[in-house]
Image 1 (tube, rainbow, N blue to C red):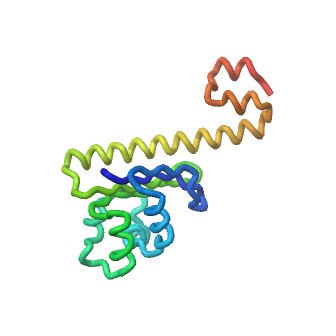
Image 2 (cartoon, rainbow, N blue to C red):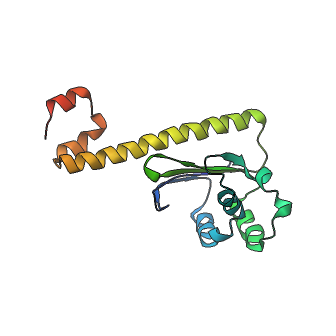
Image 3 (tube, rainbow, N blue to C red):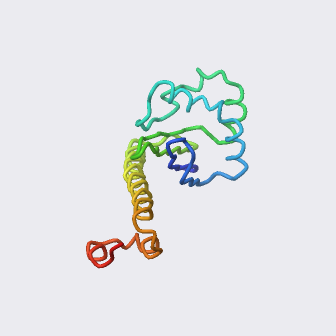
Length: 164
């Protein structure tokens, strides 16, 4: 995959984590300006495909697309020649989005590896959301700055040793 975007979105669909690979800031800006014309995303959401990781060109063949902005601006700018994407629910009404793009269609073996990466990212996303939630709860229960600094080192021993 030459291009990829991974995001964790909060319950209002605001990105909390936003990582892109292979895209320039100009490409991402053009996409954001034209996002309402993302025919693939709109089709995916309209057909209630959340939770599925799909090859977009099989989901909706390019020959069936009539949106000129999608065809003339988004596709060439973002290089959406072979796109594999998904949006998965996470804990606490968060979502993980993975969108990957290549100049050529993946082989069966490559597709399987990409799906394994998708499944790993969903697990990682749930861990990330859990850690964020845990940190917020600890901050409410024990505003001492020690807890905020050492939450990543939380063990049974540290819980027994430290108390609010």
